[in-house]
Image (cartoon, rainbow, N blue to C red; front, side, top):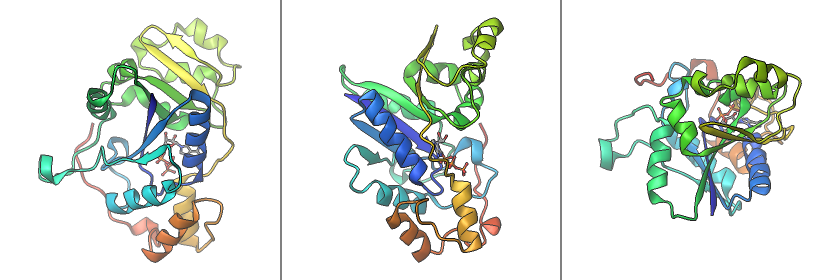
Length: 239
Ligand code: ATP
């Protein structure tokens, strides 16, 4: 079975996330996509962030009725394991844990948008993470195949002459290099972002068409993202 992990802050989850997952499932025959909200995303530790509980609740609401999409607690702080201490969640640890539970015929993918992939070289044990599973990189506006190649950790990057040839090429793949296989997902043109949603709530604008209805209702009921500039800042150690 083909399974993909789709990690993110999901603050909040929105239609862009769901549409990109649907497109990836169709193109790569994914039978399950696990949406994994990070407890404290290592790259967002200085930014204000909504409680894990709210973000996970919204992921669950958004995925109701999506049979192949699983809301995952894999990166939640677990009181039974670590006394509920908040630690940064590293993707490499999650991937290793998941792989231990998979069968021989399972194939693990890692789904990621190009805007996030451009920082991949800074992730914890990036080379190892890229070696552990195939990546599906979702195209975002303005990025070329050269951007994909030059985002890789130095050891895995193709020679500059090759990357130069990619400059005018759209994000179409796969890109198979020693130690890394990257599949490309064409742009879904659903250019909504969580930042845009938080700003919309702050302005009092309607969220229709940006998030699933149940998520819009939850945001309203829980009064999330009002005065988002003054939200609490998450604490945690850095990468
Ligand atoms: P923010 O605006 O707060 O940075 P975001 O909308 O990018 O948030 P994240 O939770 O940070 O949401 O994203 C999780 C993953 O989903 C990342 O890999 C990101 O690249 C991808 N992603 C987010 N929005 C889209 C979109 N509209 N289309 C395709 N991929 C997306």
